[in-house]
Length: 263
Ligand code: NAP
Ligand code: COA
Image (cartoon, rainbow, N blue to C red; front, side, top):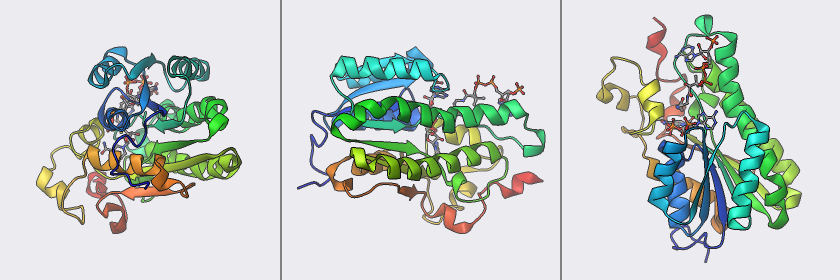
């Protein structure tokens, strides 16, 4: 049986989670550990990583690095694989975002988000390849609905996330022969996260925002964790190159929900 509801599904596996110090990445790291995996956590701020590691216990290792720095990322992945003996799963959840109108966004602001999200995802995936290809493995990148629908004040993040989804398909094709599956999960608005704190329109009531989601509510970190476990587990063994949208139907409505912010 290969159901995602079996406990200990990931026993013996080792995962590396970027952005594992907070929000969705921390939730994913804790869930993978709860399913039996040992987990390496990467982010820039060690105190945040330490908090997630403390919640996981001995199965966690902490690797402070910036995903934009390939050498540092590579050293972190080597340290994780050395600490746990192997590497099977990579989750790219590190990202940066803020609301900014394109006409006022500096070139460096645009580049920073592309560097963290898109180049960071390549850096981590590329640095993990040698380990994943030893016995086969799985990569899941966290993208966003901004990759699918035009979204005001989000051109930097939308371009980065769309790039990650294209990279996902290309790596899936090239690396299938090595037994590496590459997929993405595109969340809509997820409650209790830094992303929603930064990107919800200032002044809009939660009730008004929830009404813009066809299913009438925001998603939960747990629901994103469910999808990641499904994709990396034997239940997802025939899935590669896919993006799973988990957005309560938000992207079905067309342009992102902040259109009225354009003024
Ligand atoms: P979050 O808590 O801010 O998570 C982002 C993480 O990335 C942080 O832990 C941050 O830690 C790390 N990070 C940022 N820049 C980094 C860098 N240069 N190098 C290494 N680590 C870096 O936000 P979140 O809302 O949970 O978002 C997690 C993921 O879900 C992101 O990919 C986001 O785009 C996606 N997403 C979120 C939502 C939502 O509603 N929240 C919706 C769609 C998609 P440090 O600051 O310590 O580096
Ligand atoms: N509006 C417009 N431009 C902004 C901005 C904002 N709110 N925040 C940052 N920028 C610009 C800066 O002005 C700078 O450009 P400049 O040199 O032309 O002035 C550029 O972005 C880089 O800013 P900096 O603060 O040096 O970047 P950083 O590498 O330290 O941090 C960020 C990256 C900006 C993405 C930062 O918000 C971050 O670390 N985010 C991580 C957490 C996060 O975003 N979580 C939500 C995920 S959905």
